[in-house]
Image (cartoon, rainbow, N blue to C red; front, side, top):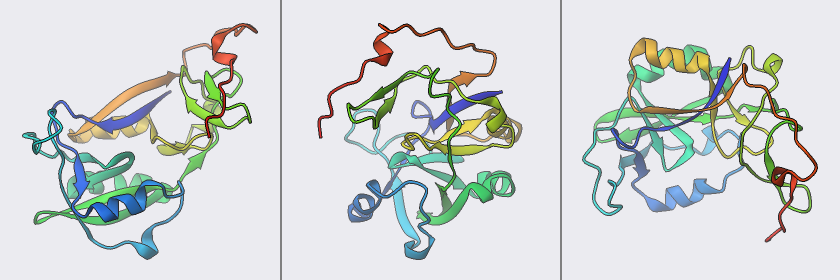
Length: 206
């Protein structure tokens, strides 16, 4: 069993941006795991910029593309058809327009607390809040058996998927995905010592 962080494949495919920047700003700081269906419109999206950060990407948009940030994933009709029966219960497919092409933003609503906190390397503020999941991370396998896609409840800033999700991408030869493996159930956590830098907290800068 494996867990991956899912991102766009920027080396070969373009990402997407909201055409109206006001729309982008309204969704940046939204509460993770909350439905957007009641306030959603069929927003228009455009191709993102290239590696120079200035001009439009020369790459094509794949079956999958990130939208603005890593919590917003878009699927074309082919990718949606492959995944909708499998992951619809974990979120909602919301329509966006890319030229004359329909695409779907998947808003993940599934917050899952499956991290083995004692084994994972987690940096915290002095008040105990999690600053970031620095890694390596370790999960509780028994809590992932029926999982496909989720937001880590401990800090839902990224979308994680399991190897079942990756297998569907491979079987359907879907493009645009990049998977960063962050955990393998065969990996055993090290024994942390009291002086381990991973256990040191940082000053809360807020």
